[in-house]
Amino acid sequence: MTDGRDVLTAAVDAARSDDLDSLRALVDWPMSGVGVIAQSLSDVVEPARVEVVASGLADLDAAAASPHMVEEILRPLAARLAAAREIRPAGPEEAAAGSDAATRDHRDATGSSGGVGRAGRGSA
Image (cartoon, rainbow, N blue to C red; front, side, top):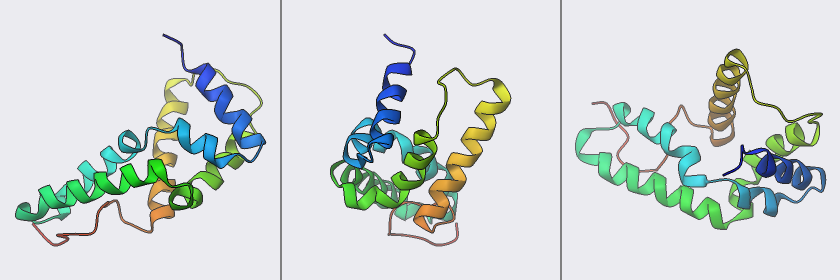
């Protein structure tokens, strides 16, 4: 098992080459969005939650296969990766800031308040 630096190096190389397809292939799309899906469930009426989760996961699966679907998410990420000067483990404060920024970026890119999926929005 690696410490992840080989994957990050590959991501930086792909970003610097403007190879969004290779960068997209390095992302675990279902894992990247499952937290947002889970957080959004409190905004979904209970009977529709299964459908919303299924729809959100299907969207994430489709993202894994479609460079066009995720380009607006990958472009800003590629710009950040291309500017990287070193790869090292984040300290606790950096990790927390990165997590917050990733959540904001995802919400900005998808135009959502956190929900993924198209069905069953409503108040609980």
